[in-house]
Amino acid sequence: MHPHLKPLIELQAVDFRLIGIRERLAQFPKRLAEVEARVTAAKQQVAAAKESLLTGQKERKTYEMDVEQWKERAKKYRGQSGEVKSNEAYKALLHEIQNAEDEIAKAEDRLLERMVSGEEYDRQVKAAEIKVKEIEAVAGKERQTIQAEYNAAQKELTAAEAARAATMKAVPEDLVDHYERIAKRHGGIALAEIRGEGCGQCGVHIRPHVIQQLQRENNEGFFHCETCTRILYYPAPPGHSATSAAATVSAGDPPATPVQGN
Ligand SMILES: [Zn+2]
Image 1 (cartoon, rainbow, N blue to C red):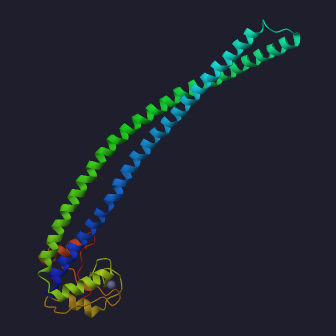
Image 2: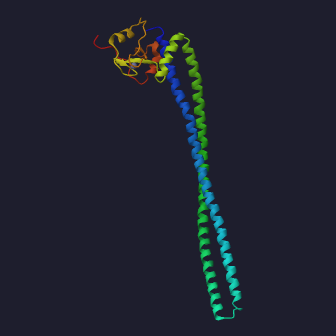
Image 3: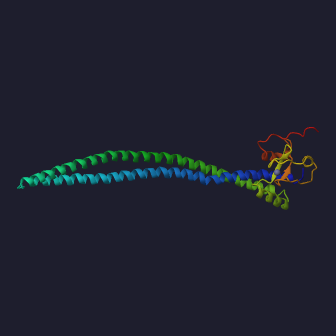
């Protein structure tokens, strides 16, 4: 293996970790916003229920006044009944009294309706307030969990950044530049291990002599995938100390099998 490949593989492993950590960190504002949105929605429910309750109370007062006014009027008409001179006027007065009685009955019906719906609004306000408390309690725990996870991720980030700085020291500067240029174009992944007979990243077939070259202990050359331009390396067999970082890179893949038919 090329002497600089090992630290590059380690660098790639650290960068993989960094990508994952940064992706997780980027999710935190969204996760927090979701929690806050639930609390806000619950509070809005309370506000809406209170608004309905208040409107109901205002209407109730209006209807109470209506009842009182029509009662006053009916009383006034009845008081006038002794003063009427003609039959016609008496009939008209009776009609007014009847009308006032009807209006009293209507206003009382409306008032009763409002009293019933007022009780319902009152229940809704209380239920919504209980719900807010429940949601607040859950949100409080979620905020703590998210904060703890955020702190942990920040620590991981600091550690990974330190590890990256340390690893970079083992790689010549121009090679780091080369690595980073490729990484930038390919989602942070500049290295590709050989998988079977192909590039482990883009899957294109790699010429056998390149693979043979990469397998050599004393290989001094750098090879790039002709399609995705990533730096190629041959994964060492599992347990090989030199590729502990490479094992992290290709975690989840089956261990490399020896070349068959030789
Ligand atoms: Zn490739």
